Image 1: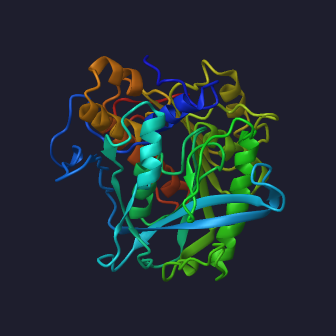
Image 2 (image 1 turned 30 degrees about the vertical axis):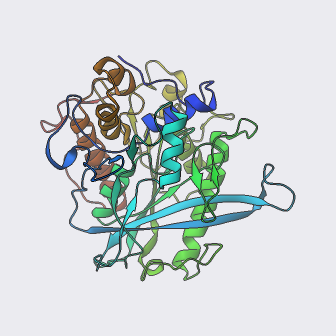
Length: 404
């Protein structure tokens, strides 16, 4: 099975780590040989081509807003005396009256250029795609309060690396909060500062979990009508009153998957957790018995090859499931599978090098799997909506195996 080039946390240089982040998060599906129509990279009248993302499938338009948070319980050892840990998050949600609100980019232009340059590509090779999220649009309240899902990225990556899944959930009526773990990937703050992974900052899965528990507190502030943004950025109309704090889920990719497990073991506010190929390695490891639902979508970090994943699975005492797509590699369930082929076509990357980046799982199939299975999981456990997708193998997704 081809494996993606070494990821952050595997002894990479910063340059290589940025390249891994690119492979883990540039988002649009096109087949390895290319896909016609709106899935292909959009031509530009001048300047670099803009990559594209697949549209979400849900009935609702999507809104999004970035928020700048400061955790005053955590000093920032890199920023100097008196400074505290800063985090950027984005909130995604079903929206209404979106016409006047522009589409948010997958990543800012400055961050995208830095990402490409650090990966060894021409920083002007391509522009970041536009997402389905309309910046600042008012929230659509389709009835009762909306379930909330929190997302944690992989090492050396950023909060946009699984945008395809995130906007899919929002289009089906979820509020999704994505978190940048500062100093372990790319994050850009409102004043233009861009932070990257820092070798002298020990960002462990427990660091991520601490960030996530802090973000849960800020979500509670939003629901109570307060604005946690340090600059008091304008919030979308209806955001706080849309949040259902009794229906909170969490998912993460790679290190973020491990952090999801750790957070569930220490914070009962999270009712259901999903790991996208998390290695489950931390010190101490996620060893708390969990009686709440948890699902593994494995690829390279399998229970057969990784003892830590197998050990974690034994601590799942409630509803549990392990599925795996054939030919999936570590980054297959994120935006990587969709965006990298577009970039490859733009820069003239060979088919052999492309396979080295994304493996052989068909990008369109990877996107459909990434849209369908997380949605089915959270629908079942946060909305009590049945369906047969999680009950066994599906003819719609013959490549997805259920691991007993």
